[in-house]
Length: 306
Image 1 (cartoon, rainbow, N blue to C red):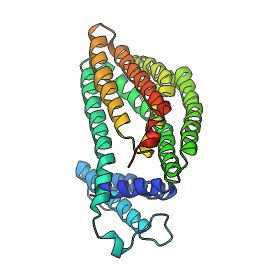
Image 2 (cartoon, one colour):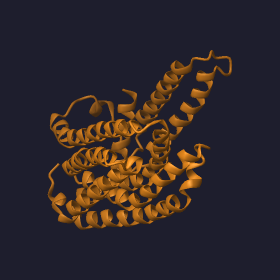
Image 3 (cartoon, rainbow, N blue to C red):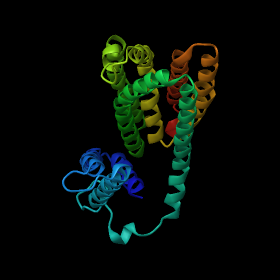
Image 4 (cartoon, rainbow, N blue to C red):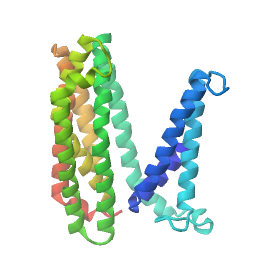
């Protein structure tokens, strides 16, 4: 409940052009979570050491604070998106229907992504402890590179949605492409860092030379992925801003299950090991970036009725 409420309000605020408020309450929530984890897990400041239970309590409390801050934000009269008790306590079934039309494909996309990722990890886990450790190191570093692409994707969603709402499809298209170009600059910078300094970055996580060597090889593949990842994240965000959530859904279904999962199994069985698994991810990213680029260039998203 806490997470759903705060995330829903955050998405609405971003759609209205306010990206600062969600950042603020998520930052406060995460800081509180870190502090409470330390206190409750290890039993500091007079509290008993509660281990995993303490971590759960810390997470629940921090998420509840995020929800309270989010609710206070939208009930504030000066907010870009505000609610009053008279208007905020009744259901509008026409709006609910429109929300579900957009939300269900987005939810299915996330389900496909998560389940596909689980199967991909299960496949890699069969390669052994050392290989899986290297994979986890690479995945942790890979996860860091998501942040810029996701940020530009959120910006594209907001700008495209607002432009179409203002009956300016020409500006919507420009915003999408300009956001992609900006994201590409960041992606190339990250790619260069991973490619040339991958071994040093992997060394931050472990001292095992074999794990470092394997992870560094994965980071070279991740470096090649960066432009494709940036393209598909940002253009998918632009399409969502236009109400086209089916495009990202089909892209994820084919890319993750039809390409990444299947090719990972094939490449591993052919003896390519961890490199083969990450090459499968690269193929997935190539497909999804091309798919998103073509769908965006078609311009059909400008005519989607929400």
